[in-house]
Amino acid sequence: MSHGILGTGEHCYRWTLWGTLPRGIQLGYTHGVCEDAMGRIFIHNMSEHAVVLFDPEGEYLASWGGDFARGAHGMQYRLEEEGEFLYLADIARHIVVKTTLTGEVVWTIECPMNAGVYTAPEEFVPTNVAIAPNGDIYIADGYGRSYIHQYTARAEYVRTWGGEGEEPGKMRCPHGIWVDTRGERPLLVVADRANVRLQYFTLEGEHVGFVANDLLHPCHFDQRGADLLVPDLHGRVTILDRHNRLVTHLGEDPGVEARPGYPNLPRDQRIPGKFISPHAAIWDHQGNIYVVEWIEDGRITKLVRQP
Image 1 (cartoon, rainbow, N blue to C red):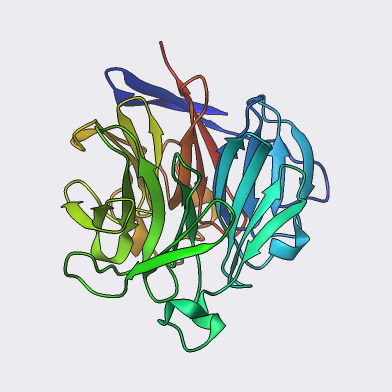
Image 2: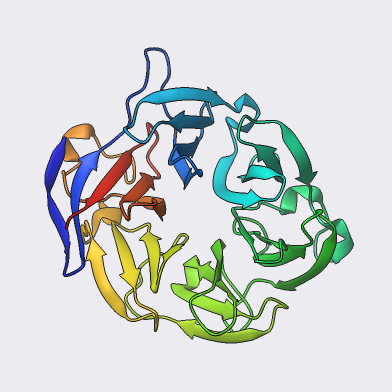
């Protein structure tokens, strides 16, 4: 069902609730989304069907991932020499898992006790993963102790930095993480959510700077050309330009986070064209946007790019 046009200028989109599920499959909290080389859409959600695969038209193709039912959170896709892979953050089992597109496990990263910042494995609660051009892996411990952990492409530990705080280099809930390649050199950008800012680092963990304007509760990222997509948990999706200046807010619903029962508002309070709790968002190959929301029965929105 379509509900009007959002955005401005070159960023205008038609709002559409998206995805058809067969009888017997119900989404849980929808936390992650990505697209593969064929244009198929993967959704990471808290249900027995934790990874759900749709064709580009929104028809159900397959599902797997019962082991992720309680902990499904961040999801990142990467095309590599050996094939296509998913990087999945599991907040219940305190692990990050690399899998094939059909769920075969390649490796698992557990709590990096050798980093010297944890007293028990349960303190490590990874929320999202980023991959550098050289294959290095960066894990955001968003719900744990607010550290960033770097690994090689072979899941070998490299370094740790961060920790909880407000000063440069410190974070409070580094919920999302992304390697930003829009500038002269790749930089790591972190959605420092509870500090209501983005924080930039070199790929070696040196603090570079902040972005603090036009944000409410930033969750994660995607990149297309010169633009950065930022799902903002408090009721909107934001697009920033190459210089991290505001381009537009999409589906904004001011104050939605203060409504009774948030984010699990009754269906008659879910306003078409207005977001409740955007948790992850991506651009597809055609420039359309997919948004998944932190809602107990899941919600997937497709913002269809307008000419």
